[in-house]
Image (cartoon, rainbow, N blue to C red; front, side, top):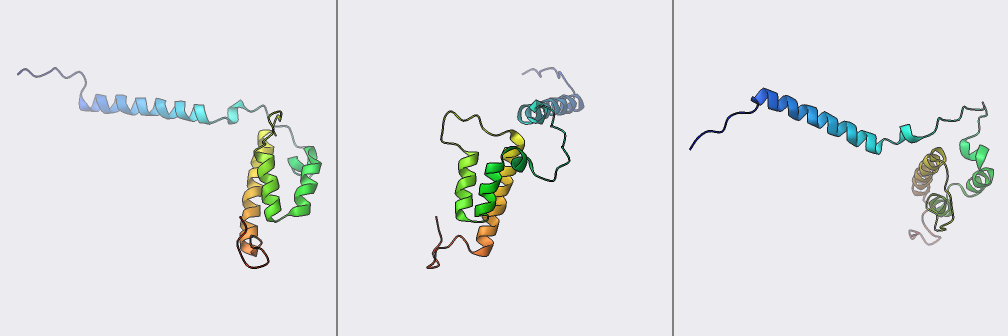
Length: 124
């Protein structure tokens, strides 16, 4: 049986394989990194209010009124995932803030025991 000719040395093969992996990583990052897709961030107006407070004050007031609670969790979930088809949705920075607020609310509800009803049973 004849030996097949070596097309690449082991070092050359490793180098080509490494280059291919780098290209694949760049492609994957480009596919999932949507930060470059965002329009330029609006410059801050210098106010201390969050984007939610500035652009959606009714949402901010509702969150303050029920913070922290299981009701707040449901409200945040309904804001983040709308069941109505004709909704445009919030801008990305607002969605990111809502997701963060949902995490903080859940942690506070658990820590303070607000996820239990009057009989000590966990709320679902």
